[in-house]
Image (cartoon, rainbow, N blue to C red; front, side):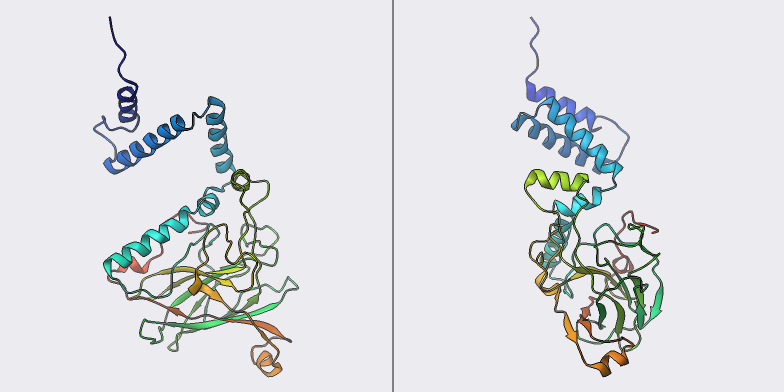
Length: 308
């Protein structure tokens, strides 16, 4: 009389074949990762007695996520993108590396090749009746010495939380600019005060967050890539103090060192010097870069982006 193999042995055989461990071709690291992921998924199905209906609902959800191109948004919302930053911080601490301005998540809405200016740029196209923002600061090394020829790549949302290229109502590269620093290491831009945004309410990311009892809102923030020859590339963003979601960001990007204080400017002479008509909001934020050991550290991380 034949005896069926033990369930676990049968599962191990299934996982080894499905992840390619028994095949001579393929990528060994990829095989090992897939073997772990598939095994964890099977154990989760068993632990929670997931039904066939629940399983296929999840498969259909992945289809919807891809159709709406929200996978990167969901990665941020589940804290996975923030976890990559946590891992990078842990590795730097373990190695005893120098640390400058903290990193935080890039998010899914960067667009490459924004217009480049020297020292100063205007970011908005003037189409919105919004509070004018004067954003400025200095790029230095860890000793406070100004860094010349740094590229400060800046992007942020409009007053409705929309980003150009993803919001058809905005002009090309609206609220997206790159500024190259001079010998003084300074950058300055004129823009508008952004607001935070929420996940598309009818999208798969918010659908998942609803099931978790979570909101999908972000505080008002401004994204930065800061790079310079001889320095590690910095991916970060600053949050504007006073926002109701400052410490309740669904994407987990808030860091205490990256909170900027908006200041109301009513000095008419200062406004005139900045070619601004009337009162405006000023945000000052400086960035300290860390020297790089190799040229690869000077480049932004590789991932799929618009117009990259």
